[in-house]
Image (cartoon, rainbow, N blue to C red; front, side, top):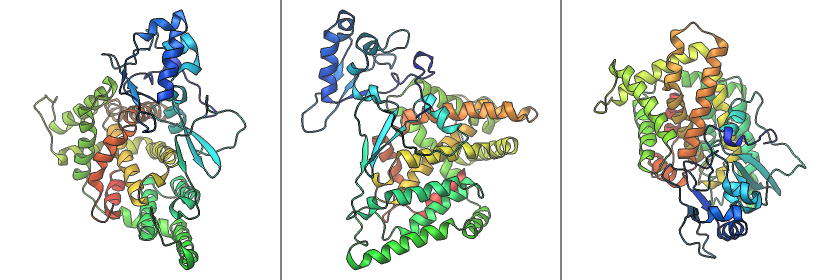
Length: 429
């Protein structure tokens, strides 16, 4: 975020399009009052259509109604914000002022991150050459006071008390260069399964006389997973497992397509149309029509073939980009928001696998294997596709928490989210 600067009207996907703008009650009144106070602002008042009635004390939020083009009605033809132009940043709703920044309060500090729904943030995060790190700064990183989420760190709440230690452990695993990303994620899932019976939301295994033993076991499990011998053995075992990917491909395709049932941007629809038309065409051996469909086995066969061709041209480049994505996920999304580490990792792996499907299936990358391998053009094409796919996916799906909760609930079982399901997802990468 120290390097981030909004590129405003030059942005390929403005944050003022493709989703509703949430408004807290103070923002609604401030916005109306500020606009009415100046001649320039008054011409925007009639364009402000607020859905919902905020109710004090209930936390209910209203939304600005998007226009027929799916854009904020206060957006000017030059793609700049009319409110900011008329009255400055103080007049903006908090959601508009803060975005793409996020703020997590933990351990007596405020961690400022950002959403990958912003194209410029996606470029900075995914294409960065160094591991993502938190750095202390005296510089103001937020335009106004704001806390989006918090981890209480209460010693009586073991699940949050060990948050920083467990998060750092997961980041170390993701950053390991000695085994493939899929193996690193399976190692994290192995740890989550091992500690799941005693380390979860609401655990009472860290109380009284049990505290010392629970802490010791938690740290021993972390230490074992991080040993080189364990990771090499796990990677070797994982390489020998043949997991059919048709069911995973079908599940991911359903997740992506079901999102179209809700309001979405033309950008998201165009991405899905391009990717699935390309996959269908290769599966059928001819241009696909609206009546055509392919089986999960056909879909996965094309995906696996393209994945292999891509890896043979660019080596580990795709893995490096998505390792950055995973680091960002862990830093931005506290695992304490869900009941268990297995559920947390399942959510992350579903999203990484969906991004893989969209990236490998993207028509921009299909033409590259037909040309001689060229490192710079290959990497440039991949970088552009991954940024486009990740930003579009994040804006359409990752920010739709209710949709994700319903869509991902299928991964749950009577006893929670299983290690086996995570292993299958990791093998899809």
